[in-house]
Every structure is written in C-alpha cells, then in structure tokens.
Length: 121
Ligand SMILES: [Zn+2]
Image: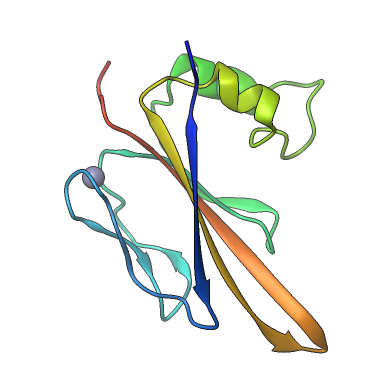
C-alpha cells in the first residue's frame, strides 16, 4: 500500500479553472476560488488552507479518510501530513493548487482537491 499521491500545481498569480482529470467536470470556480456547487463523484474533499476549513466533504467518505479526518488525536488539519497520506487509499490523488502574489508582503494560498478514481468501492 503506497497511499495517496500529491500533485502540486503552482498557478502563479492567478487562479485557473480546475477540471477533474477523470471525468472533466469543472471542480473549482476561479472567480470565487470556491468549490463548484456540484463537485463530481470523484471528489473526496476540498480543503482551503487560508480559510482553514473544508469547502466540500463527500457524504460517503472512504472509511480510512473518515477515520483520519475525525481523529481526536490529530490536528485540525493533519490529514495532509506525509504519514497520513501513506494511510490514504492508493487510488487517491490530491492536487495542491497554489496561487501567490503580493498583498502586505508575499501571500500564497493553496486549495487541496482530493480525488479518488475508484468511486463506489
Ligand atoms: Zn470526476
């Protein structure tokens, strides 16, 4: 078992549309940098680091993912720790979509989109 795969994508200064690599459904709306109203069936969860919260969590999570998310010993957001990624389902890919720019100093934000290929298993 190798766990989830992390793929980092740096958009630079401007957020771009993000489409599901499995079915082509648009997941992220760049105008709002929020999750699309209806993420496709492959999306397990979407986490926005600047907000420190999940934008979307699938109703029927993979049991392992659910367990890690609800771990009382874990951080509010320890799910992306490398140790936890190894425990994730092998068919999971997490895209870290990063934009950066200047506000009062350099700022960057990352939206993490977790997808699973084998939905319903
Ligand atoms: Zn999809």
